Length: 603
Image (cartoon, rainbow, N blue to C red; front, side):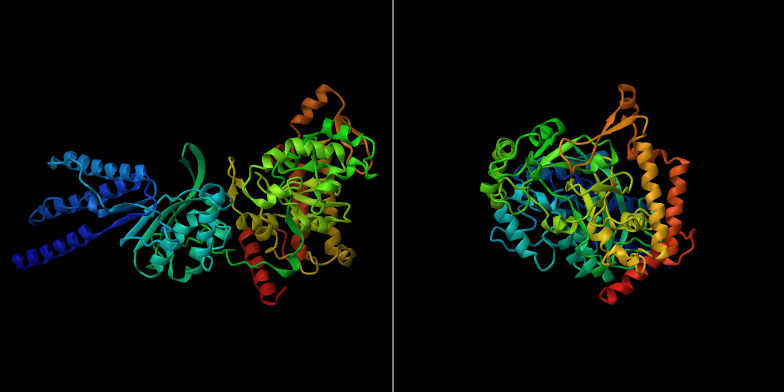
């Protein structure tokens, strides 16, 4: 009986060892081999532990046979690829000596063909590169944003790459997503068992989630870290780590080190997932990004006022046509730094722009030399215009007295008013509405919670990012108060009136705190039509005002601010027909239901 049991145990033991020794780990962006080094040590540790435990049961102990051939890599840099081979061999030698085994010495380091020096995504002929057979894929693919591809890879390779994957990935996905696409494809086809990849936390954004989202029904994230610090090439960044498998189980799921019942594709664990929320037609044409200048068009207040004071130009027009107050995200949440910008609009020709003599001369000195160095032909050819002048935005805010702005990246989700004469920067989300009701809905906790879930995290402070396409265009506004309706249509709606009153009160109180009447004076600009300057009445007042920013206000969140926000939230909840104390999860669930209903109805 004992002999039979030992034979059966021996067969299981040898079978396990055979599978373990045939197990292969692939890192298709292996760099100098750190991940492969750790993978090899882990495989050897498992083999060694099994051998020791088998010996304690009376089975023969075997000499360790797992070696560097158990790990595979792809690395495009020849020096790094050779370093990876050396790293893996050093790991093998260190492990053997540390555990009391001898190593070969003739030669000490042997060739290691399992680490290939080539591109992991594209072959030289422009076709898609295959990856060698493996059981699992691990790695830390390049951190390169979509907008940096051309500048780093070059125009032609980027065009080939995007064209090859055009049916599977959008052109605005980050470089790391191509590794996720290939790994996910292998997992869906059951050619690998699992993968674990590091990406910047932007992997949670819609454009970067495509590989996982397309095959979501057959793939499960079993372990993930949504947001952790990481050092890459000497720079501190925030990353996400995603581990996926095909076998679907409800146990053993971990997110950020915690056991959770599920891991959503956006690396949350709530039962309410907003991943599938659709853009709503009724929200179109209202939310925009500000203009992207791409050059030193901005000037200080003194220079701007000098230009504004010049006589009219040869075309009979004042410089006020093209010299405008400028607002960026930092100016909204901090004190306005009195920045202005030269803006020749979206259609003005170079000859027409030159008629604004001094502003054009400034742009010719400060902008043109830089623009001549960039790759994009249109950027060089139209050097006097902003890179992205946003004609849709300009049309949408034309005729408005004011519009709503919010920093695209900020610690707190804050909305504020900007006067129509101000030009918003690309780091601002712009809502082309001038009614208090819309302002109030946007500043409610319901829209904040929705936008936080639909946006990512960004920047040095790892702050929430507001994205017009996902944060605004997917949000279901209260019935009858939607962005496609002119404010006049709901001006007498009691719900709208209540929201507007609370929103106005919020803005009045904030402005009174930011710029107390006893600390500032308002000075008209040198030409009419621009916002008054807010000037401290004394040095002491200036020192106090320096600390009066919206960021500091919301960091402190005094009782009066909290009270007015509660009143605003209650008014917005009533507009939906909800109780004022509705919980966030329930509110998000109801909003998601509204989104689905309206999307299905084509609204």
